Length: 152
Image 1 (tube, rainbow, N blue to C red):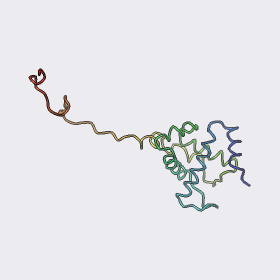
Image 2 (cartoon, rainbow, N blue to C red; image 1 turned 120 degrees about the vertical axis):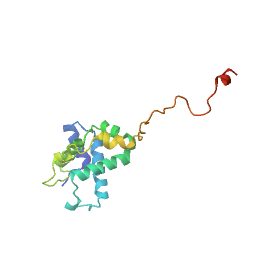
Image 3 (cartoon, rainbow, N blue to C red; image 1 turned 45 degrees about the horizontal axis):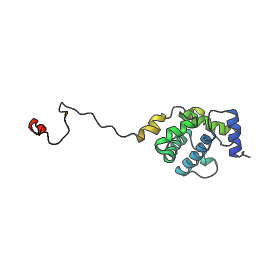
């Protein structure tokens, strides 16, 4: 029998204080989201997702939930790199909240993507290319006044 999620998280957080309780709830919700997107069955071995699939699901789900402040939210929970998601997953596996296959490894979560590239860059305004040539304008567009007009 699998333990209650909240009780398991309380035990984990008491033993491993690196991640906020909210990080565990978020990973659970992101896993459910990923299972739904991949159209996996609700139960059984066919429900399994790989580390790579989960990380992509986490990325998409996080951006849907938090938009431009995604990285700030994740960082506030102690999450700064994809390996942190793997640590959370395996903490839950060790408490029998999540299952794993023989091929699942913590290393599957290492360096999958950079948080700035994944969660910040998509929200930055595109940069305009630098002007080329030597025709930079010194004055704003419009009618330029002559010295006679200035004295009036």
